[in-house]
Image (cartoon, rainbow, N blue to C red; front, side, top):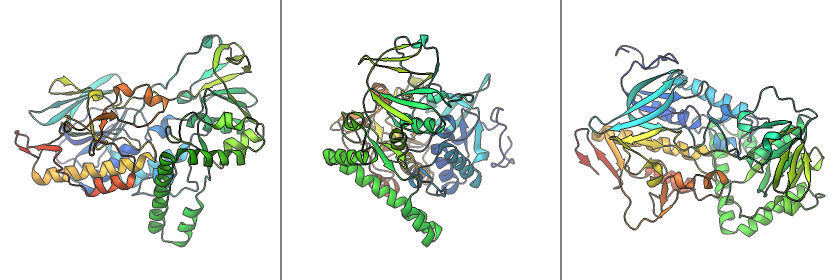
Length: 505
């Protein structure tokens, strides 16, 4: 590409990049990547950037998952972009609507031209001599390379190729159809079928009422219960705000109302778990007044918010159970036979289709091989700075959202902080930014204070957080807002260097 070519002109989707260098390379065209791209364009319009997306469509999570009923597990006033507020009818929205919203956002702000589809990043190698990342990526059956000053990893936290799929005794002898929700078949007809959904997480509680509405007789088989909370699909307060106030004011108030509600309920759950447990069970009994053993099926062994709560819009799961279109069984699997599932209790469940809603497989940096000056980087042994950068790794941002609130809330703060950092470096004529080592009195802790199975399975491979800020990963939007938006960039932890090796802290 020559210097005269417009930066807004799209590169061919499957051709090697003509530019030898970018200021920023964003990995992933989901919520994280689109948010970062918006803030770069708005705050640093002279920065040359591109988004590499391994798949052939925009949307990330919301394009990958296509199972019946797929929907947000956070309200859209906080999951939506603050710079392009959600205006759909429902605050708990379906996956197709969310993907359309992401695509429309990218189109509105001219971000679509920056996306290079079918560009899978394989490795990223940092070279201190020229203060650049060399990026090797695959397009179809060939590989190519480009370079960038900053690498922004916005590809999420799980494996897009496969979910967590434990094997059960006798599974391969099952005569019916075995499905993982991450690979839902387009041709599946469920009308009149007996379906068992194995699992009790967000995917399972979404699938059960959706499959029942399609005419299936569904059984949700859970080894242990999950906290399940009903919430209206429409937000009455937000609807009223939009009726009576200008759109910009209404969107801001609706968003802040949802943020405050989330923080208050989370703090209540952590400080008074017994009270929160009682409130959740009160709601469950209200929706299922005649269900025998309701406590057994809906009282987890852990405290609220040790794992993420499951939201069901308009009590759809409870309605399906109450009306007899679905059932719930709490038991362990002894074996699978050709006709269904044999339970540890001695019972059995007949099935035409078994859906293994057994969870995600975590893959924090998308399987990208990182190295710094020829030395491989293992994130597992490093502290994470402000929940967004790895100790000792230059010019790299890892976008990771909240576990107790909407993903986008944290991601938008990370993008803003990243752009503030770039602006500071430009003013100071710095080329390199590296988080230093924590002080000796900073004790290591697991990166995520969460007990979900997909986290426990890979906890050993994750970075660590520290006992003190800025190494501590906080789950509080208000505190992070102050620190990310207004805290000093040169905070004494980041080291800044010029390309020739000069240093400033």
